Length: 438
Image 1: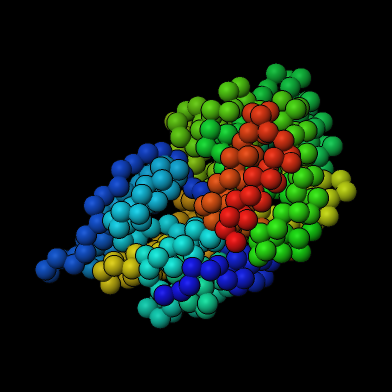
Image 2: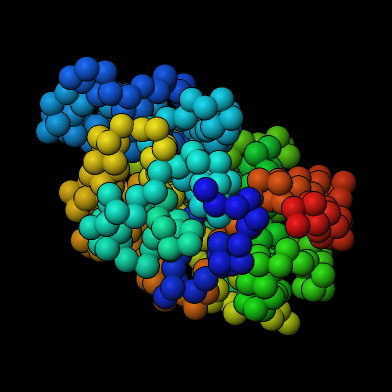
């Protein structure tokens, strides 16, 4: 068993994409209930599988994937539980604590995965899935500890602003903003046109936290960020500057009414639904957004041809590369006590066939090279180019730092959105939680 001391090799998780693009946090919305986990029973085997694609088309596709695997493997039954992302994360935490985790689940990597591995909860896939690991190449680095692989990434992408092209045109916005000065000009035009500029799900904190993460990516150099993940030292002034940038944005009042209690992806009043139904002009979100929006509109088309995307704007005077992106991915992992068939199922989920269908359904950006050309959505296809050409991809801070540090950070960021906290408060809360981890 690994020691509980987090090694520098594991904690240095902010890497250039040429080395690895690391785990992420998010996907489709909705609700669902967990199923009881069970293993081999006589001549039959039941595999429990939890995922967060619980709206069409993702939910239907995964039901078919499970059925196809069972048909090809007589005696193996897949119990599928589709959940809204935040519900799934909460239930996974509880399941791990109770010792009743699903056989196959989504692993987000970073400090969270390390805790699971150190507790003996997650299966080492290095040998049993060697061929699949070879196919995925450097993508698996975000789910490796001391050279061993504990998760197989199935989707990897980046965060940026998704927007409604038609609303932008109606407001007289002819080009996507490249700098924050231009961004504020866009906000003014949208307000003048009677449109709420941005939706944000502060009610679940992590969507709001992405703003501070991104401002830090623009204000701080790559070295400072990489060293910070390794050392848990947030003393560089760039972290306070990131908070000051956020304070300025909040003061401009660009967000939807009731944003402090708005959910991220769940239901018709969620941040994603407000964008999907034309009630706001844009939202900061990841590669999962087209699929989420499709599940939240009656015609299952989301914004359709009006879907646009642009990167987080550059910050004047910032030390970060304006081409650097915030991102990550999701991986399938197997619980330590799961039946052998669970490993076979996870390898099937990363097969050419399943990953190609995943791409065709606009569920994310596939990691299997054989599936990349099957991405149909033009906006998602463009994200592939951004993902593959970015000089630096910063893993979501809350995932990289783990639950304690990331949670304290996100709480403090949410307070800034509520005008109840400051730029310095974010750094102080994060540093205090980090010091407790050392």
